[in-house]
Image 1: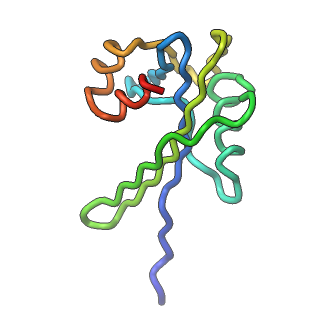
Image 2: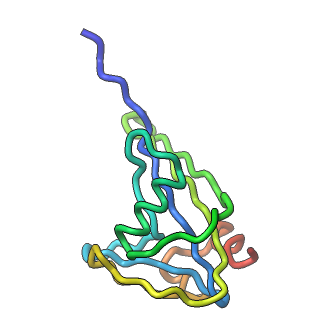
Image 3: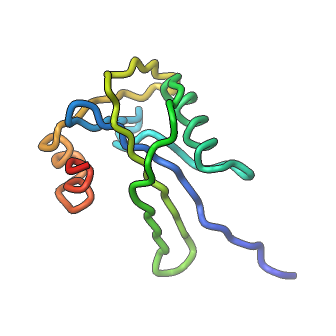
Length: 129
């Protein structure tokens, strides 16, 4: 018997920027994250992102955001492999969201984002965008 094939877990996230702030989620579990989620079998990246934004925020994505970064993480034991595609989109006006999954969302300026996500090149690049 052959072992089952393993595939990376792929997720698609978006960084919304509005007035030099970024959108952050806080799930009921207390986890902070960016909007988006896990790709389902047969979906494109944009289909995943659009579905996740509808599910999480009752929000229809306008246009196609720019690919910002691809994050690839393979654990040392090679028993877990994650790939995350991160997109970015600047907004001209504050969107109206309706949380359908019980998430809280907050707009964070650079200093607030550092307290939540930690300092680093990733945040610097976001706020330079």
